[in-house]
Length: 281
Image 1 (cartoon, rainbow, N blue to C red):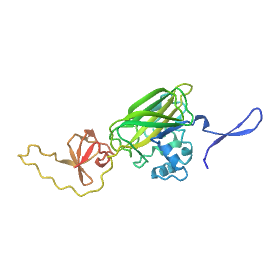
Image 2: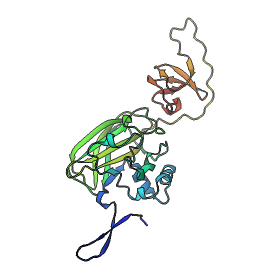
Image 3: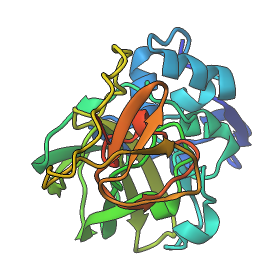
Image 4: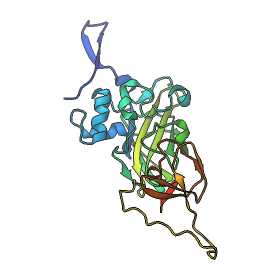
């Protein structure tokens, strides 16, 4: 049976006690393709979710959040999204009720995608005219086991003055990415309300899995003076907070990796976790 919270009202004319859903006034929608985290867990069933991620989300915040799947919103956002929602709580819109959506996991059910044109679908249970829809994607090298921050998001496209229906499609262009990412959306009402809705949809471009254990690499011979293009040699064990340049080599977990994109390392960006930054040799 679907769980709902209720508020009691008494009609002036009849004195009859009426029970109304407490969230009916501001429950309006979420992404259905690729499905948002709350939509995925709602469809799996709040009482008996199937995926480990949804089980953990229910354990963290309870089942009611997934019965109220179309209410991940702020009533008085008015475009002040970055001011009102702190880093690490973007998927929940900073609301404790939906805290399970912010769990930092690499096993959220994800929709396979490819770079290029992609048609997404938004499911609105109460469509509102004159709305703006913003779409973002996480940057290359983003780690799903780290908190999602505003600085992790790259803008894709904004559609203004939209009049959504129950199921509305838009076509966006997905950039080049590898591995798991989040497609993030903001639905901001423009006329008659400051309300905004937020979604996190997990997507997977492929090619970003953590390499499994393999045989120890053979020792590389030292270049001879007659070698015109010697290979770069390992530069020690990988460590966080270190500036690496393209071609630098490190060891981690018994394997050797070569840097393919200059960066300053951070905890969570270990070479096996960020194939956009390191290539296993």
